[in-house]
Length: 79
Image (tube, rainbow, N blue to C red; front, side):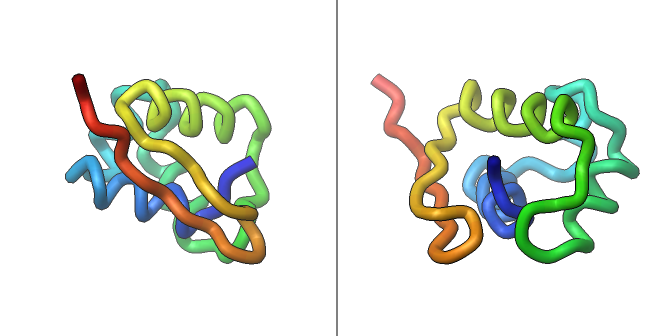
């Protein structure tokens, strides 16, 4: 699972808008924006949250730490 702040942080590292993440993940932009208004782990459809996570990982984001206690993200260097 990933947290709201990890989703926002990952988008920031990539320079992606919510619309860009929506297009890349197949999750509606309104859904992403609704998730990002929450705190902690979003109350979300698990398939949608997994699609967001997989998309961000494919784009080079690594999720680090515990999503509730010490959530973090970092961008992997491309070779």
